[in-house]
Image 1 (cartoon, one colour):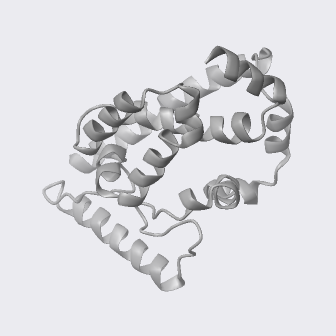
Image 2 (cartoon, rainbow, N blue to C red):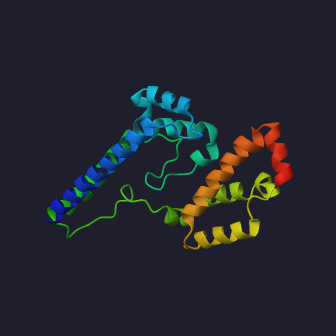
Image 3 (cartoon, rainbow, N blue to C red):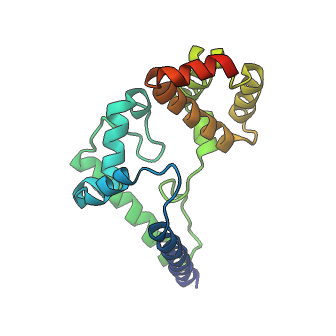
Length: 203
């Protein structure tokens, strides 16, 4: 039966992931990783669980240090990080989710509903959301980044246009944007004079 197959799939999936994560954690704690900030790890481990549930700590950091990014609406909830869902919103969301779930099970899979909160399609959301695209492009082609010569503006525009049109390369674009934000904040703005001198000489 469809409903039992789906339950079995989720159980198997979680079991496999938990086994893999356990193995990774075993090696993680037994060895020191180069360039890793263990003070940060200790801070996170000592942080009360209530601040980590629902990625609360991560959301708070993004809202404080990246307000423009936090202002972009989430594709699942249609809320940004500065908005708090009302009681009515949560009840309505739960009612709709429950109705879809039970209708799917009761119909033995003949009725099936697409749940965006279960599956992530970042490239599609990227192509549809103007604010997200603007955030990426402004960081990738910011004056500080372009002046260093790290990225080729022409190639970057080609990649951006291709992903925007639905082509492959979103995850590359995402990683490049992350690097651009990091580089702007921690090298160009807060980097040491020695780092800036080396950049001006070598690039």
